[in-house]
Image (cartoon, rainbow, N blue to C red; front, side, top):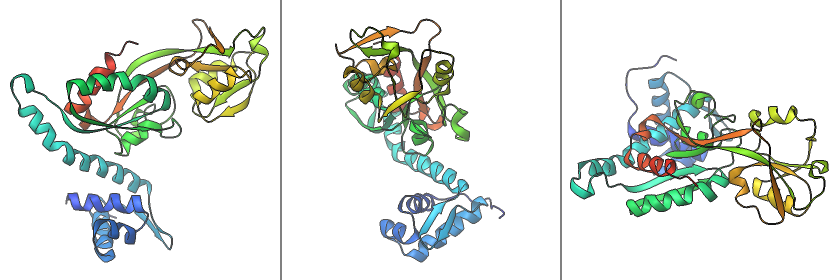
Length: 303
């Protein structure tokens, strides 16, 4: 399919996003207040312009092809820029003490422990300096595409991610051109029931998100660490189970902020695994006032 030089218009981008999110042309038409034929015509026109099939059509609806997934993600990001354009221009045009004042919605994706412990103080300072900012935080599990995938897909302006894990942030954006920056490096530690005489003899507790190869490689080199026999939904649940005497675990520092007197924490030494936690954003949003302001606050967080 040969592409044309015509650019996709905003209304065509909205149609692509609606079809992807609703799973069909009829549902997209209902969402947008259009006819099904108008949606179908728009999608065919978009496919002709970009030179690729964007949706697989079937009796059960329409699903994006790999090219369609990429197109829809870029469409969301472009449409989001239209949304913030006014606030950006107004902020840049102010002078005096109100110069670079930021306003509007700021969409953030973060994994659980970062949303609990890293973001709140940064957002507190951010909204104190910029009362017009309205943060929207979504907790996203660091599985598959994770928080970086939310940014690549245009569903978040900035994500807090584990940068040395797998997924888009680790693969240079997975082809999505994401920008990353390290905010903190945190060591893992052994956590075990308080006062236990031989914690290394306990079964290992783990959780699905703790799947970075940088951790697994270290684990495989330790002959005292058994195969995980119990898995929990998240690191908070693992910590609770350890406190109940059900096993030991290896957890990063952010997760251990929830530790109680029911557990003891033992460092793993200089050769232990280290997790890099950072931000992920797109080139276009890295220059916006709101994202720049949030990154400044995140970098100033020393706790």
